[in-house]
View (cartoon, one colour):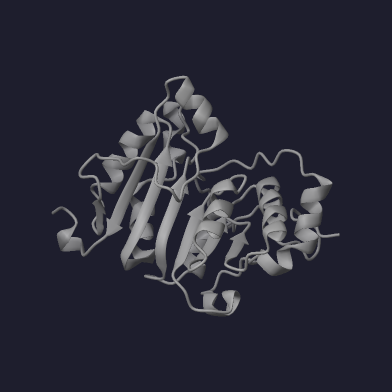
Length: 251
C-alpha cells in the first residue's frame, strides 16, 4: 500500500518540498496534515497513476502528460479541491494542474477526480514554488489561480505569506503573453498586501484598475466558509491581473 508520506515508492517525499542542506527557508505553509483516512490512502494507491504527477525537479512535458496540446491552468493550494473539480468540469478545453502540499486534500480530490473521470486534470503533492521554478517552462501557463492562501494574520507571521515580490515575478515569468492571474482572499489586510505587491509588479495589470477587485467570476465556486463569512459581514476580494508587456503594465 502506497504511503504518500514515507514509504518506499511513495508519491511524495516525507515533506513535499526539497530540503537544501545548510539552508533554512521560510515557507508559506506548515504541514498540518490532519487525519489521513483509508479512503484517501486508496486514492493514492488507485488514482495517482492516472492523475498524479511525481515531482522530478526537471522541465515537464505536459503535452505527453495530458496526451494533447491545450492551454493550461495552474491552481496553487487547491485545499479540498472543490474549485479545481468545478473548473475541470466547466472548462474541458483547457488542461488543469492542481498543486497542494497537504496529503489529505490531495487524497480527497483524487477520489473526486476518479469519480468524475475527466482527463484534463493532473495534480502535484508538492511545494508550488518548486514546481513552478523547476517543472513548468516560462510562458507556459494560460492562467494561474491562488484562492484563499493562508493569511498568516499575526503580524510576526506576515513574512510567511505567499504573495511577495519575488513570487509575483516568478508568476509573471510562467504566464503566457496574454495570460491571467486570479487571486481571492477574505482577509482585507492580505488584499491590501496583494495590491501593494501585484500593482507594482512589472508585467501585470490589474483588470479593475489600481487597487481594484471584481465580483466573483463563474469559474470560481463559492465555498461553504465563504458563504458563512459573508453572512457574518466578512468581505471577499477577487483580484484579476492580465499579463502585459512590462512597459504597458502601468497604463
